[in-house]
Length: 261
Image 1 (cartoon, rainbow, N blue to C red):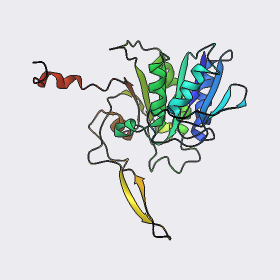
Image 2 (cartoon, rainbow, N blue to C red):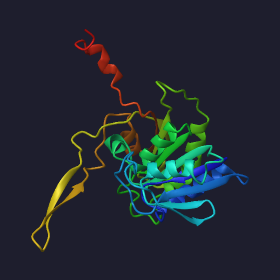
Image 3 (tube, rainbow, N blue to C red):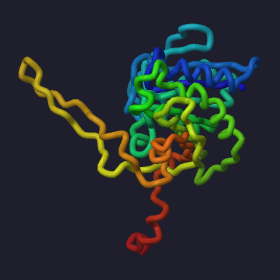
């Protein structure tokens, strides 16, 4: 297999090193690994692209590139420049430092890369490592992803998926916040919503009197409804969620009657 990897934590992030190991295992001895990742951290940029300015691409080594742009930019640049003559068989994005389950999914640059891959017709998987009291102080807090990442991806690649309304499925994988030995298995799970958890702002006054606001997240240990992604993660399971970029609320159509007259 020819595999493209990217992330939103930046080209030097430890999670990208973890993903390299996963990708090499999947690609096999005769496969190819390509890395196209952001020059700087791009957490929270979702699916944004550098539409109004050029994107600098720098070759760091054979099949390894750095992009001054978002994760979605990395996918676009990879497919239409260094890999234009031979597209990847698979795109892997991550392994993110922190979960991209529940409402975090909507903000995630890691997810944004997988969305772009799916829109471009390439099978794509986003992988993230949930942090919590049981794993954040380990020598390697990514050890659940290290141990179980390749198997999770193989199981996903063995599944059949179809397009709907022109949108392909991409996959969101979250590894639980526990040591690798305590992972209980894999669960297929819907995206959840942590009750009462939202991003907000915390104000700070600088010495020069100017006021700054830091964006802050909510309690990541708050479980959503049973059986959803973050809930099974907190129970020690890897969550696997098939997704599409179609944001239509299809279920709402049945209750809406005022627009077809």
